[in-house]
Structures are given as C-alpha cells and as structure tokens.
Image 1: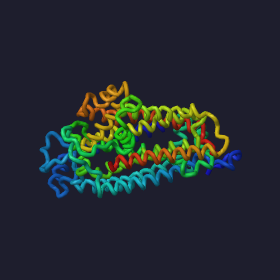
Image 2 (image 1 turned 45 degrees about the vertical axis):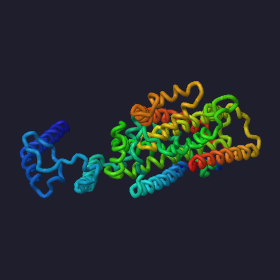
Image 3 (image 1 turned 30 degrees about the vertical axis):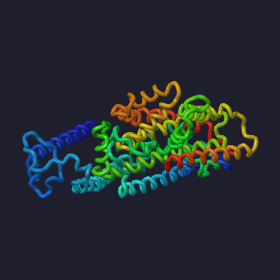
Length: 142
Length: 325
C-alpha cells in the first residue's frame, strides 16, 4: 500500500492503486456485458439480409440510426427554403451547427459564476436530445 | 578451476544436444510411422518430410477454425498442463541451486525483473511520479466514467475487428459469403460479430453521453478548449467508423444505407459532388466503394482515432478533471 500525500489526503486519492482499481472494476463490468452480448450472439446471430443488388431498391431505405434524424430532416424539409434548395439548406444548417459545436469553447469563455448556467445548459441538452430522438423515431416508423 | 568447470559444462551440454539430435534422427521415421498407423492418427501432426509418404488422411486445413477436429484440444491441454509443471520444476531447481551457491535468501522473480529493467531504463522515479498523481475524489461519480468506457469499447472494437478481418474479404463477390462464413463456420464467429456490432453502437452512445456530460458541466471552458475540439473530432471519427463499417457486410441494408448516407454528403452545397465522388469512388456505390470504406475502416480512421485519443488523454492528464461547481 502507498501512503497518500498528506497535502491531498482530504479530497483526492492516488491514481495508482485507488483510481486504477475503480477503473478496473468498471472495465470488468463492461467485459461481463461484452461476454453476455457474445453469448447472445451465439444464440441469435446478427444475421444478413439478401446480398446487395444495385438494381433492386427496397421499399424503406434508411441510413444507420445515428444519421436517421439528419435523413428525416432532409426528407421533410420543403423543396425550397429562402430561395435555396431545401436539402442543401438542411445539410448546411446541420454542418454549421457542427462547426459551432466544435468551436463552442472559444465562444463561451466565461467561467460559470453560479449553478444557473449549468441548469440552462442541462435544459438545452434535454430539449436537443428530445428533438433528435423524436426525429429518429419518426424516421424509423415512416 | 572455474574455467575448466565451464568447459566441462559446455561440453556436457553439447554432448547431450548431439545425443538428442542423433536419437531424433534415428527414430524420426519410425515414430512417424508408428503415429500414422496408431489409433491417434490425425491427432498429432508431425513435420512432413520429403522421404516419408503423406499420411493416409484427409487434410483439413481449417479444422482448428471450424472446430470439426475435436481432438486438437486434448494434446494442447496436455502440453499446457504438463508444460506448467515442468516450468515449475525447472524453476525450483534453479532457485535451490542459486540459494545454495550464493548463501543468500531468495529474491522474488518480479523484484529481479523490475530491478533489471530499471537498471537499464531508469524509469522507476518518473513512473512512480506518474502513478501516484492524486485524483480528486469527486471523479468517482459514475458520470465521469463515460469517456473511459468509450475508450475501453474502442479497445474491444480493435480486438474483435482484427478477429473479423482475419476472415473478411473486401470484394463485392466475396464479402457477403465471407460474413456468412464468419457467422456459420468460424468458431465463436457469430459471437465476435455480435460483440463488434453492439460495441459499435455502444461506443457511439457512450461518446455522445460523455460529450453531453462535459457540455452540461461546463468542462470545456479555458484552458480545456482543445480537449473539447479533439473530443468533437473523436465523435466524428466514431461516426465515420460506424458509417464505413456498415457497408462491409454488403447486403441490401448495407448497400442502401450507404447509398442514402453518401446522398446526405452529396447534398452539401458547392463541395457535395466532390464529397460524393470521394466516398463512392464514382457516381454509384460499387466494389470500389467497398474497398475504399474497408481501407478507411481498418487503417485510416483507427490511426487518426488513436492520435486524437492520445492528445485527448494527455490533456486530461495535464489539466486534471474539472472541479464541479
């Protein structure tokens, strides 16, 4: 056992072994889940549809679930928005949002003064997640 | 005195090796014949020699993969068990001899190896400094482990992905059949594919969850801006992993998901056509697309992800976990 640094004794633990042990337990939990998934895979394989055929378009063409909300936006957007082609407009808006998200720390630089800003961000996240989930479900059932 | 002893021991070892070699040479063919004609024929595979006729058995080169030859595991287990015993025996001999010779108590093997390595790399001081770095206690709440789970799932994806790549063939003619081979013939193949499939989805979910956690807690503020930027790039790389991997089974779902997915890229104004042609290698999804996605999926995106992960972790390490309000 290592003796903890008295300076940090109150509010911290040494990275090794204490923190590494916690991380190890988490990793073992994930390993157990992965093994369960593997056993399920032995019983119910992922499976395949019929081989790819460029000449045979299925009735319901869908992208992966994480692009489904984007695809749904492009499907329901009117053909022309503000005089620009609708799909191009939708993709541009999403790309613009992505760029904003990437550069967000350079826009919001001020340190939080109190907990209110945190709650505001939480509400924004919840609203955004609800909208994306709704669009995804809509895309899945339509 | 000492020199003569060394000469004697080297001579004895050389003599013993020569004897073993001679015995092996003389008995080789006979032992081979005996095994081939014994009830264990097919269990043991022996180095084929030019002067010895091939054994009277169907060669099955993939039996250890498909698990038809059940007798393969028995000799393997035998080797492992008795080999372990043998190693312990040799270790005991060496240990007794050394204690007797040096007249000193035995030092554990781990301490010896650690000292040997440390004498050469001088690493113990910086290493202990790195390992003892204090981690704040609030970092034990469950929401701080989302990023770690993402990284761990990346490792799972790497291991299972390499396993799948052993059997996968990235051509239009063979891709579908090779996935069928993995699902039906390869031992634990369907389990590996299932793990790869669901860990991919889990990785995306965990990545997004980690990002939302960081956003809500405001952990992106200075001086952690670049950490956030590298994190967004890692999310994009994870999505690219999913996007390129989805095509590889080459079934209807994969083909048409890639078709509409690249259509989304093609809808970008000004550079859309360029992006579409870069992704599809032409105007349509074809075998060339499959090859490109395969290369991206197993080489380009993993290397880029590793590089950004390194940067990400280094920054977390240097700046520490942000203290919540």
